[in-house]
Image (tube, rainbow, N blue to C red):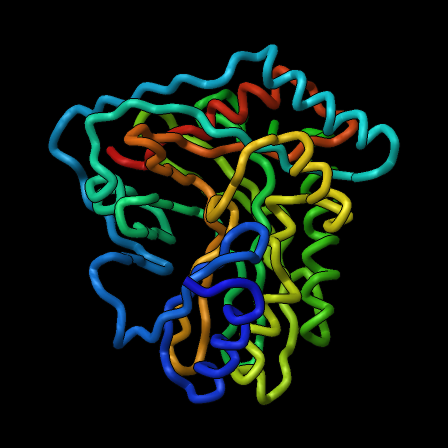
Length: 319
């Protein structure tokens, strides 16, 4: 496993040689893997921009044991006070939830219906609905996702799009990502703003709100793939704004290690690149499974609503 700058140097080296490779980078950009596709083995399984739909032929056991609301509230207050003091405009607060399921990590990987899927050894599995960046024909695209609601609620689409807190949170992240892309690209602009995607899960349907932002890269961008990702990470949608101070707040409030959760993974095909944010993430720790999830907190956030959203995001998209 590579550490810090060697991750990005290797991406630059392979990109310049146009060698197809897989990569994954943890939340704090401290560890990662960069492996030519010709050298990959079955320890790492992944799908990028998948449209596969495979149903499982059994009733699923899936139980969750979240931290209690009182413990969540203590961490929420750390974030909320920083927001009120103006140290952050938006902070993504996450926690691990212990789960019990009769699904193996292999089954979760195989049957999860998600655009982006990754299984890393016997350590974790990710089934992410959120693309990080796509680079195609000298153009870079990013798709920040902020805003989730139970799709079966009456007028759910209207409620989530008209919710003042959700709108402010989404606008903040779009502005942050637009600024991030401007570090590596020209002519950066929002091409689609606040559109809805439907996600089906093992127990309900969700609506999630995304936007599309694009920009133009230099002709030799393949030589700078690692440099580009180094400048863009951590992903704005899973930390907040301003990024540097908000990460300090996250480390103080969460009091656990995200590791690869909320990092990114992706693939370079020799010409173009596609990648995902590692959300919807199940990790095996000491023979127990933990689902890491969270949400964006603003000064207007209600603690109990945020607590319920954290639990709502603990699911598998298997049916």
